[in-house]
Amino acid sequence: MVGLAALTWLVAWLVEAPLADWLTFSVFGLTRGDHFGEAVGFFLLDVPKVLLLLVGIITVVTLIRGFFPPERVRTALMGRGQLTGTAAAASFGIVTPFCSCSAVPLFIGFVEAGIPLGVTFAFLISSPMVNEVALVLLWGLFGPGIALVYMAAGLTVAMIGGLVIGKLKMERFVEDYVWALQGKGGALVAVKLTWEDRIHDAWSYTQDLARKILPYLLVGIGIGALIHGYAPTDLVAAIGGRSNPFAVPIVVLIALPLYSNAAGTIPIVQALLGKGLPMGTTLAFMMAITAISLPEFIILRRVIKWPLIAVFASVVTIGVLFVGYLFNFLIA
Amino acid sequence: MKKIEVLGPGCANCKKLEANVHEAVLMAGITAEVVKVTDYAQIMAYGVMSTPGLVIDGLVVSYGRIPSAGDIAVWLSE
Image (cartoon, rainbow over all chains, first blue to last red; front, side):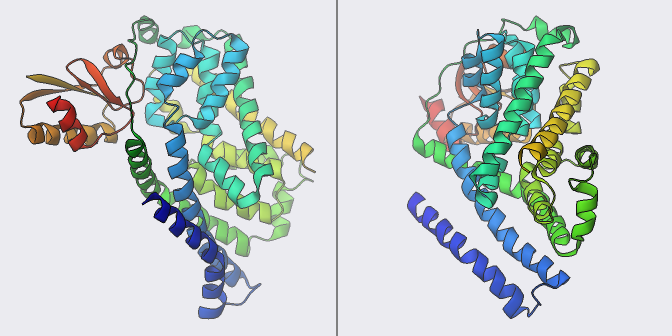
């Protein structure tokens, strides 16, 4: 069963690009190099490509991260020093599942177990910012170099953010009822799962997620296709290019009201890079869309007060700006 | 009579789990009291952070996933 699924995936992956090319330029008879032809070609190439990557990646990644539930991460983080705790929390953020609906129980659970606030925030920053799906997508589309750069950048921001919040002594901005729960949590009974359970869980999660992010993805690819076919390279370069020192803050501002799953941003990122936007500026744009999320800030209000939310949002924003400038500087 | 608790703040997955629980009770042919636990203090008391969690007679049998009605029925019959 599993072997057959893997084989089908591989065949689809290999025939996808020539098929899209053939459809666009032979069947539809569109012209290569023409705005419309290039946009349609991009769309037809990218929709199945990104979908295939997503389904394959999410299934495998979900399977792996099933071994790192937040409960286990919490145990691993307990009783660590500020520095090692922050580094470990940021790293766990990559593999541990997180969605805005689980932010509140996760936060309470960490605080309840006596994990320092800075360490908790390192995790809260890294989890949405270094998205494992985005990581593997970047790997598949642009190669390992850029994927690793993305991961390193996110981890750096999460660690610095966690250390800063830890130093600021913001404990009084956590709601009192959360402190009241401290030390009242029970020990979790280990639940054994068979491989069959795990594969079944991973597959149903993938189907669920694919359905949820499909609209984002289609819009993302649509925008990517428009940029690819129509956006004049000169305009993109004038706004986002190296000659404009404010390119990074400008793209972050554009990204602020946008909130999307990381998967939806990849096609846009791909098109922008193709138009000559520098790597750092592009990464900043992508991270601002996924990590600076208004819904998440509002949900967190249930456990922390506005000043701490404001610090959290500022730290993430500054971190994203820093990553943008740093990588523009590093990758010339 | 068994006491079944569904831990979760009321997200879509928690509702799915609750539906599976009701189905499992019918499958197992037993009588059971099904309680929804939405209070975080009570959820934390079981050591669960990833919802939905499932507790049968005070024992956590699953968390962070949605077990099938068939699996739950087996646990109920044990």
